[in-house]
Length: 523
Image (cartoon, rainbow, N blue to C red; front, side, top):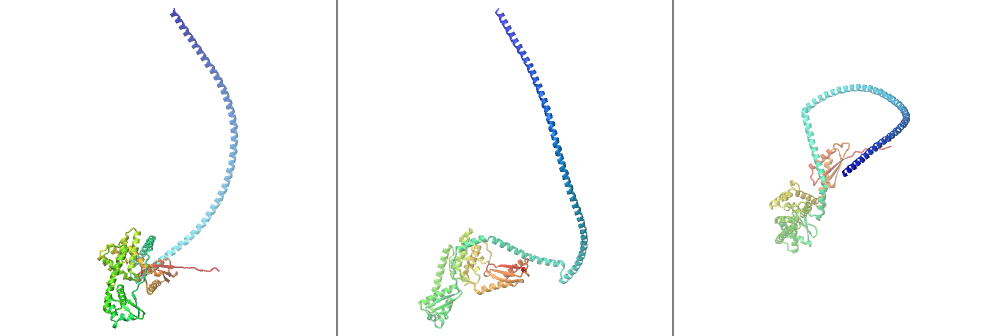
């Protein structure tokens, strides 16, 4: 029974569920149908609205189309009018250009005719010139034959001769160009060398005392002159014989003059005579004694002077005989300049310049101190002081740098090291400084006159003036005879003649000046 109720309940439930499902399906289908009808109505309304909008759009498009057509027609009309105006203007311009072209063509035709006439005229002239050239060639050929006959040279031989002359001239020009380049290089390095030399000169400013070949000994009274002369002149003869110096006893009050070229002998005579005057006993035996004492005094002075100078200059390790020879330079002069002072100055200048160049200043000082050592014995031996000094340097085994400095300081041999060049420069500076050396007025005037005479001897030279104490000459040439093209050659010729015929220190600058003036007056 229970099972039957359960089955019945189950059946009722299933039936209810089925009924609910059936009702749901029916409701779903009814909803779909309702929505479909609603959608169809909305679609129909939308189609009607779309049709209405399309109709209105077509109307507006038609109206806009008409407006655009009207505007386009107006624009086309305006463009057409502008184009017609432009075409008309262009046609007018083309017509004008055509007229100008026609006119130019006419002018060209006229010019062409004129040129043709000229061409014909030129052809005739060319023919005439060719005929004349042929005639000239024939004449030249005849003259060449005559010239070859007269000169006894063929054409080829004459050509070779002219080429040889031209080659010689070109060699001269080449030498001149090379010298100009050398001058430019020297000028480029001038600033550095000036700075070095200026530094060296500033650090050395010695005083110069002009010395001569005579010495004067003061006497207490004029009676002493008779005692110096002695009975029958025996005292003065003894003194002159022992010293080799001439005693000049004249009317000069209370003074005796000693004359001689050997400064050491003159100094010995002066010292001996002064000692004799102080002693008062003047006779041959006493004179000989005093001369011997004076010689010893001079030797001591020479040794002390050599030691002092080498110590002060820092030149050490010299052979004692070299030191003595350096001391002897105290009594040697050249053009009034004391050689020992000159050697000290050269050593100092060379040392300063070597320091500026980063070289060994001690070696430079040694070379400068010994460069004139030959002058200490050139009164006793024959030969140049350069080679006498070189022999001394070799004898006492100084190094090759010192030897070359001695040999090359006056250009007798080529300098092979920088120290020799420094010694050359220092020697030139010391000798060329104002007041260092004297030149007689007569020698100076002769040198200036000869320089001006050489310059004035050339054709076309109007005036010449030597300036800068003969270190420069200014030559004025006649502009009507010397042209701008050959003024350089004229300058070169003057330089060569000066080099061949004169001896001078340093160099001489030659200025050749040509001036052409045009003068007129406005009236």
